[in-house]
Image 1 (cartoon, rainbow, N blue to C red):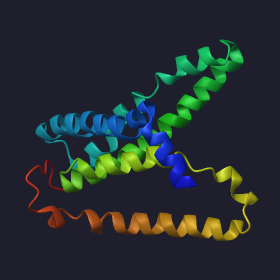
Image 2 (cartoon, rainbow, N blue to C red):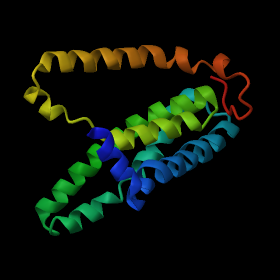
Image 3 (cartoon, rainbow, N blue to C red):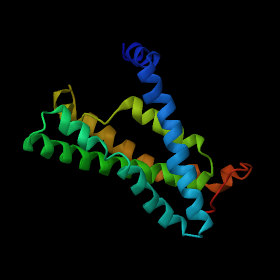
Length: 173
């Protein structure tokens, strides 16, 4: 059922844009095109990883006006739009840190593009509904274990030594 819904969404023009074209285009622009000049300027890789995603996060702030307009152009609509945009700025920046880390470590844009597609397909986790599951403790445990494993393995699995033959490697970290 979930796969059917995903494939149905992907089959529409908007789905192709949201789940395929936009992630590839955004990763090319926000990773390859923004990180490359930072690298040429000999900025330290850690600074590149931390600073370049701010551009990615800020680029998503255009939604404030759309949300404000869609919700009635009231003071309350503006407050909700700003709160939503700040939340989006935070999670797109965190995602940008991860994608930039992968790009800087591997020199390959395909990994960040794939995780971007995956994240767009999955959406933001609905942590507010965990208490409605049969076993909230199990769900939270799996989330924490998954996060710990992700953080523990992202360094070793993106080791530049694993990508030595990749000719596009832009930064040595």
